Length: 153
Image (cartoon, rainbow, N blue to C red; front, side):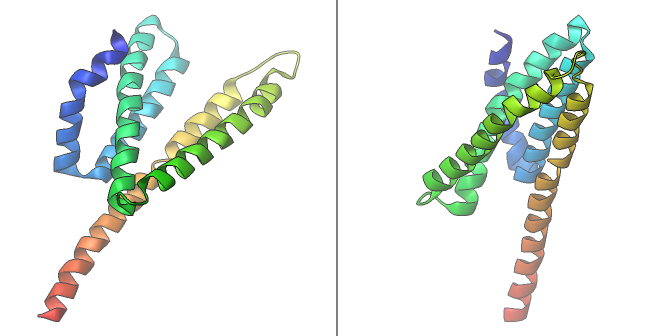
């Protein structure tokens, strides 16, 4: 039941994207991912419920945004190839990293996930670079388009 909260909230997210743009949506989705991870690491019982709600929205909106972004940038003719290569590549890297990472964490006599937790949080923070990239490309594109139109006139 909790993960289905994204169904009720998705129209609001669509409105958010329409009013604030895809870069803001990417930042919001990334923030939900970092929030989910942080709440799971925090471990009070209440945080698990909030993390599950945040994860439901994160998962649904992440795939929606990947689709919208890929379609907007690459168009419908090459969408399947780009989406498949992108998702497939990331999935392969994630799967390839899973077992070595677990071996490192569990390899000693006293398993400790703290370093891995900090690394995952760091990756989540670094991922805010992509929404920033999209935002600045969009802003520069609008500026360039306006100045190009002014120069043509």
